[in-house]
Image 1 (spheres, rainbow, N blue to C red):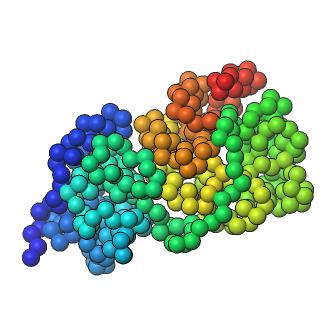
Image 2 (image 1 turned 90 degrees about the horizontal axis):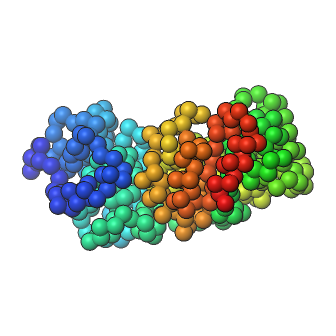
Length: 376
């Protein structure tokens, strides 16, 4: 028998304790989140409701929740593991984690889930936090082994593994992300440790010309050159040069991973760096063993449209604590400049990416020298 409007059982004391401990670190949503068993969910839902289903939900229930911008979490038991399907306005994720007990949505799980949502984590990340939470602990989770594996959209099929990409040193240093090969030519003589060509064009000839020009500028120099997005052009030129092209690696965003031939990049010997914006994305990418992870955006940025709100230093610290033992080479990205660089580096990463701190500088060599000194 269903009772519409009856909320899911929640450990209220645990929820309040988490909010008291972590609201200053992550921020707190002014609107309370509510959790409902699917059978009891009220007729009217909204963007701060999460509906919990034991097992797969019917299509009409999925559509009803989606129409209100609410969150639906469907949980199935598979052996000794929980399979969670998270449906939200940000998309669908399927996550797989060992089961701590026989209750899919225990009061403690609901408390951590609602706390994470109230701390501004998106639904798929909140689910990761809730499943990774150590029962009886008051510490924010940092044990990678307790976090879920990604089944959808997985980059490696469940039960399989992928060889890691060639590693990067943990201290990539000052990382300059530049819009043209001309900028790469300016920065390589200044011995910027790591540079990236982020050239945007739909003209294949223009892309190839920029990649080749940037590669020629970096060849034989100390700067490590990454090519953003244009992975096929980069590996073709690298192969044509017999592996001595001046290109050190390729950088991809989340949206590029589904289209790129990761096996071809790995076989080329080039490094692979990937942008991530939260827990689920980091877990997804960790499965392929990238050379580095870029974590952000830490601060507001105007250089590109970001899929998420700025993460802030609290999240950045948490991401570094989780991922550094797994992927030692981490890069702080998004809105980093001379004014906040030391704060970013104090977290313990060996690299931070900048754009406007260089491109808008009145004296580029002086700006580079000032930024580089911060790493010492």
